[in-house]
Image (cartoon, rainbow, N blue to C red; front, side, top):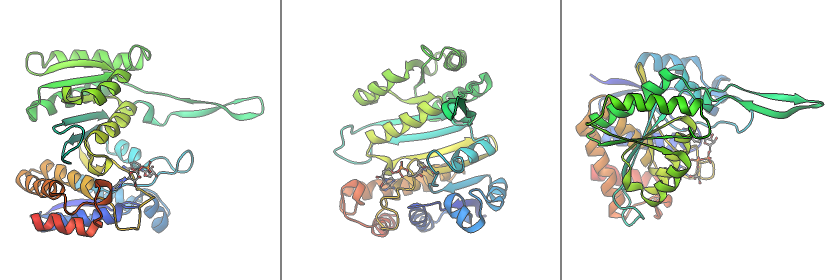
Length: 337
Ligand code: NAD
């Protein structure tokens, strides 16, 4: 029986890294029936809609998607499709693991997982301009919405994730010293949830600015990190930088009724169409997807082939210091498989 999964190739480098990922999964014998759908600029170009109904219907049916990056216009135009998909399917947990693959990096043995709240905070899209005199855009106001229920489910998710993956500590990151209400509610709720795991999983709290510094100085001190939407967005890119950059950072958006797996990076317009993008982040996201559907051994095999290819150092894409094209790198991984 093949598992039906929605495939959104995406914009920019998306189609190229999606093609590479599908080739590798096929070579590994994954039993997947892809339902390819459009979104982002590709959706606008073909259907006049950044999230066509057919794409939403497909995800409603399969409850699983592998998604390439989507372009979001900056400061104007349609709202982020990624944010809209997370909200539509209530994918409240954004899981971003990062571990050292590239040899000789500054940190040789890191293994962190950042769990970011995905549906609340400053990303709820409640914002407006305020007119002063003749200037209709004299000021702007954005609302950071934090709820007790939303905080509880993400912190509980982080503790359950730690328990399921044999991890010993959850660090909750906040700014409750300044944002006493919104961040204060998140922190209070986290402390309450942590009591249920006392004696089993260690709990610690860090203020976000100090956390940013500590992640650069002593990242090995952290294990599972849980935080609100905006801080999670920023810290997860920072963490990906500790282990070799965005080209190696996967992410999963998980909710009670669905899951969408993606690379953390964007459409990389500077290298789109040149055939040099690194498909590793999307491939690692696909490994998370395989694990999610219970195909644990295959995920391990694909991940090992990727790690061996990178560690052997002979066939690497440019972002990893090599000269290989996306296709050559993909062929090298398939050869290892
Ligand atoms: P970006 O991640 O696309 O690129 C940042 C830098 O990293 C660029 O130099 C790029 O060449 C490099 N890079 C990224 N992925 C790479 C890969 N796989 N291989 C090699 N190099 C890679 O970030 P940006 O330039 O800020 O954003 C471009 C567009 O992507 C924007 O429209 C943004 O909204 C969108 N975006 C989408 C997602 C998503 O769909 N999940 C995430 C972030 C940004």
